[in-house]
Every structure is written in structure tokens, then in C-alpha cells.
Length: 208
Image (cartoon, rainbow, N blue to C red; front, side, top):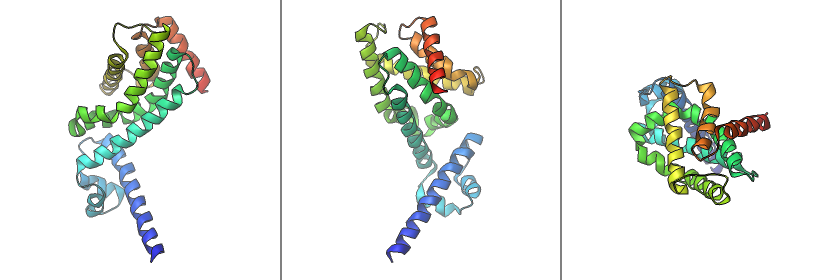
């Protein structure tokens, strides 16, 4: 009996994972994709999709949760072991951007369903980590801003959202946006453009 229960749970988990993976692909292809479309693309009946997600908003919310978890992990990995706050900012933005780029259409969609406030609440841990990094840089004189660290972290977050929208609108090439994002965030914290560009180039070299 226990093995049957384990088998059913594993199958349910596999179905849920497949639905999420297919939903992301379908929603990035067609932001208005319905639950029926997602079910057909996933090769399951409509009831199976609703068994895991009561509505489209819940499905999108789960995808956003996964994206935020990946952003949080990438941000932490990017700044880990980096003593210079400015370099840590460059590396963390570069680490986060590929995820942000992958999910940027989903974020735009989520702002219509999960709401902007809902997305911001999910990103609170990342914003707090950014604020702590900024505080250290401001205290050490490596960074400069008329804003306190928490306000500056909020501004940085909004700048990245704005850049994602610019890529969505075709105003910036996606392949250039990661480096541009890192330089943009650094210069907004008082780092000279030449130094910001140097730090971003250094971070790219270390990634290779």
C-alpha cells in the first residue's frame, strides 16, 4: 500500500513539474494562453491541471515563486566571497540577469495577475540583501548616493524591471542587457562609468 501511495505521489509530482515547464513555455509564447491550451500542450486532461492549480493566477504565481527562488540563489552566489561591495554588485547583477531575461515576459504578465505588489513582496529577501550590500559600500566610501540604502535598493530593483520592459519592447538587445544592467546599477551608486565597465568586464572574465 505504501509503495502504491509513493508511486501515485511521484506521478503527481511529475505531472505538476511537466505542467509548470510547459506552462512557462506556452505563456512566454502566448501570454494569453488558457488553462485548456496548457493542458493540451502538456498532454494531460484539463482536470489534471486544475487538480494542481485552482486557477490561472495560481499557476502564474507558482511560476513567479520559482523564478524568485532562482533569482535569490543566483544573487547570493554572485556576491559570495567578494569583499569589494562594488564588485559584488556587478557580479550579483550579472548572475541574476540571465534568470531575469528568461522570465521577463512572465514578470510582465505576472504584474497583470499576481500584481506588482505581489511580485515586490516575493523579492523582499533579495532587496534586503541588496540593501545590506549597499549599506556596506556606502559606509566604506566605495559607493555614494543621496539615498539611504533601503531606498537605493528599491531604485535598483525598479531600474532592472524597467530594463526588462525595454528589452520586451525591443529597445535594447537581450544579449547586451546583462552588462548594461550591471553598469547602470553601479553608476547609479556613484561608481564612475569607467570603473563600472571595468568591474563588469572583470566579472565576465571570472565567469569563463
